[in-house]
Length: 179
Image (cartoon, rainbow, N blue to C red; front, side, top):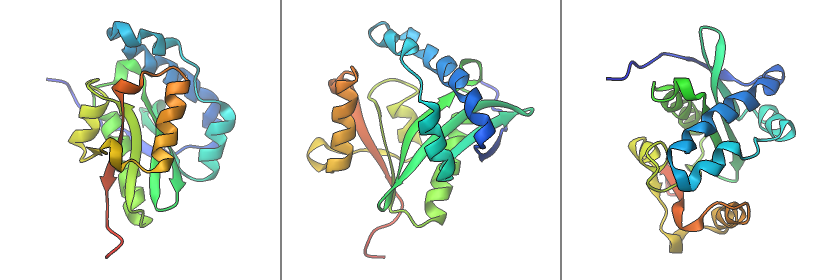
């Protein structure tokens, strides 16, 4: 049984940005477990400029354990949805509930700010991807139901080299327009 850790989740500060690359690089090493996706371990990290955008929008959070940053999540407000762009937890801290705590924080933020849903794109059948998000209540959006925004994100990911047949868009509905 894996020991779960309580982390302190807080909004990312500008001075945190320089430390996020190391967390993202460490997080990506998990893909070495899947030979066909191992190249992702060496993929480019999110730029400091992009991190600054999410920090300025108050849609970036870090997870700390014993005052050490061990994970982060970046999201963006897009119309009535909150889109999760990146969830990263240092490899040695994965499987301890930190990613779940970050996701619960973003879901709570979305509820409080009256978003209709939380969306993301991820890998199907990678244990720490689609099954992880499904356990949090997310559902895969059928390909014929994907809106143009999410379709563009998936298309951009394919252009970046991600295998389209292994990717999916997911959504956690928070409310409906009828409410």
